[in-house]
Structure formats: structure tokens, C-alpha cells
Image 1: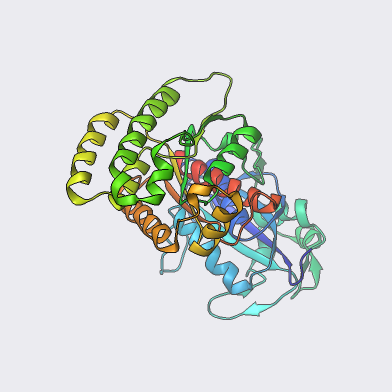
Image 2 (image 1 turned 60 degrees about the vertical axis):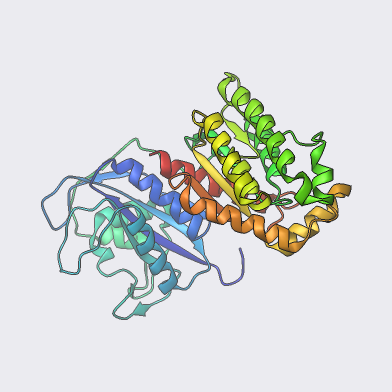
Length: 382
């Protein structure tokens, strides 16, 4: 366990909408934003405590965290807000899509206006103590100096708790994310082809790669951009149209989903940078005719890398025609992508900063990216 890591215990509850799904979403978000989940309790159905409403589904979760207690509080409040929970200023209880309470943070005692640790009155609530005892029976309540199991044994709360058959998962797999078509985009040298290929191999996905290696205009373009920009962009437009429409229209029953290392709108992004005003107007008109019925990805992933890392990656792959690429050109491309993202794929986009990540050599970095994509798809599709 890393230095300054504490075991925090949480109580989760929901009594609105798809309650089980809401608990699962909360767990995935807690794992993404707080740390590794150590244990998840069984799920219990309980009557609303303190007010008349639908029954709750409740569980407890133990997580290894490195954040301070107040930072943990801010994070769980943000997660509640993301999941549609609006905390009210007035006192009392009310139905809620999700309720996440920090019960214990190691053996720390914290008492102020924002946060009270241990959670006040947790020792009086069976819907907290029973599931918590099943995953952290020996955890100590630092004020009473008693274990959770002892508090449960001494509890006078006789509320009925019904064990359900709901099983909540610690982590989300990409296959269960609900995604059917993932487009990985990024600047030159960002690693989009490498990541797409790794995902295809590891998760049995149909791989769609941009075919550009034999484009006769590309080396000439890097030598004389003004002269060869229009024929280059037109050749890319034709090649991408043929390849993209053929690849995305043919379903592969033996693959779980599709992953591509480019999106069709890439053509517009680069053309706007390289072409003059009149040439781009003509190009955009042709693009609209060709791609009006093209398949849209349900996840548009933009791999962001800073310019310094991009230049390092370009140098490593050693393509002669890329030697003249400079920082200014890469920054224009990056800005073009960011401008595009502001107005397109609003409900499908996820920007992942990989400037300080090496997902090829470091499995942890690769898994971090996969989790980001899987969580994005799961939350978007449900």
C-alpha cells in the first residue's frame, strides 16, 4: 500500500430510478476518482429511514484513498451531483438518486461544520452497520473505541433489512461499457494508431486504420505545403471515404465492437489548416456531399499530448518525410482539434491527457486509459 494511504469506508444508498444501476455507477466513479476498491458489501433493501418514501437499496464500500478527508468529501459531493443528486439546504430527509456518506477514514476524528468523522449516528443505523460489518468488521470507531462488529451487536435498531441478489462490480470492463464504435483521434505522434491496435487485440474489436502510408502526395506536402496541400487533402478525402464507408458498413459478428484510429471529420480539421479560404470552401462542400450518411462513433476519444512529447514521438518513429514537421504546425493542428471538439460530437467526446503517460511501456497507464474509456461509455449509454 502506498505511503499516506488510508482505508475509507462509505455507505451508499438509492431510492429513486434504477437503484441498482445508480449504486453501480457510483461505485465505478468512486473507483475512478478516489482509489482502488478493497471490498463491496452485499446489497440490502431497507425501508426509508426518517421519512415516508420508496424502499432504499443500501451497501457499503471500502476504498484505499490518498486524499485528505475534506478532499474526499468534495469528491463524493461532485459524484452525487454528476449522478443527479441535489442536496437541499433545509434539514430533514428526502428521496435521492444517490446518497454517498463517508463513514470512517482510518481512525481519524474530524469535527467541523463541513465534515464529521466518524459519521454521526452511524452506530444507530442497522442499514449502515450490517453491510459495513460484512466487509470491515474489525474497523474501529475511534470515538467509542469499538469495532464495527461490536457496534452492530449492541445496536438497538430493529429495522428490517432484506438481502438482495444484486451483485455490484469493483471495476468495469470495456466489453461491458455499451460502446459499439470507438474513434481514437489525436495529433501527429499522439499514439492513436498504437492505442487502437492494442484495444483491438486485447478486446477482440474490429480494427479500422487510416491508410495513408502509400499516399504519393504526403512526402511532397511536407517539402512544399503551399503547392501540394489541395491535392493531398483531396486524395485523403477520397481514400478515407472509400475505406471508412466500407469498413463501418460491414458488421463482423465475431467482434465485440469497432475501433478506429481516425474520425471522418479529421479531413476537415487538417484541410482548414492547410488550405486557403476558397479551396477550403470547395473542399467543405464536397465533404458534406460524401459524408452526410457516414456512421458516427458513440465515443470520440481525443488523445492530447503536449507539443514537446509529440516531437519526441515523431523523431522516434523515424519517418523521413516527417522530419520537417515543426512545433508551430503541430500546435495549429492541436488547436484545430480543440476548436472542432467545441462544436462537434458534444455528447460523444472524451479528452484524455496522455502527456505524462506511456501506455505502450507501462501497463498501469494503459489500464488507466481503458478505464476512462469504459466508464465514459457506461455512463453515456445508461
